[in-house]
View (spheres, rainbow, N blue to C red):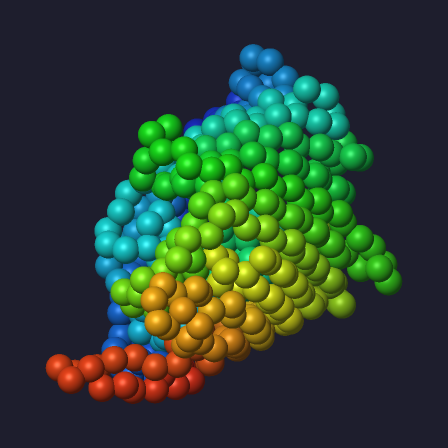
Length: 400
């Protein structure tokens, strides 16, 4: 009941392997979620889940050469999500997006190798899991242990970068300590998918870079991150991720796009710096060229914390608000100037209850002012407004 993982150290084998440079992290996350008011008026509950297995190999600990790190990730999801029933652009269940957002899928989203040439710099290449970017202490990840909503996991202006894609780049550690500062520059394929190798479809490249530095304002831990990207891909106007929102519209073509993004986290009260426990604030800001990126401007602000209750070291909580300025797509034909989407906002609150260190139960509530204004219903295609959606959810994560 007190071990950090359900399966423990495998009779000592897990710790022995880790000492030799081979480590494994595995988890299963299940979510039951329902739209209980507003949205597309399709009030229902849906159940889904995702399993993740990540293996890491350190060549130096393995007795080979120094500075080499191999990462392999296997991922699978199943069943359904209510994200398409809210009318919102931002999915209310990030966990169900990976490795692919529709259906039951198993894929290898990451197979990459990083080689450090010194204590200060290295190179990386392979199939990359880009969700590791835009890191934030209180609002980050794949929806399995922090916020459910994608708006609090990564900056939406950067979502033109595929989740899993071929790429290569440079990693720079200005102080030789990755916890102090890290800068990376990447070139990735603009058409990558988690379920393909990625070599059969090259139609544009994305150049991206970001830097993150640890701060010590008021003697408390914090981080500042800034990044930018530029894509050469030719897009269908308004990214295809919006198919569930805009329907079958005739969309124009757009060449290339760009985006800049920033985030911060700052502890206001720390109970244990080594365990990163305490209460703090976070925020994200971003801007893009707009169409084909639906999120032209974005910001989010919130409060997060963990381990603030005595004897509850593994509990975590978060409250956040986001606002996204939508750039309507360009349609072909007589409706080319029609604006049929509105700006989106949302609020979310969750509390992660650690039943044990490896079994986490999380109730969650979201209130969303969705992008979609109206939908067509019935055989006569009657127009019906899409109102503010209230979404309740419960998550159970098992750390193996």
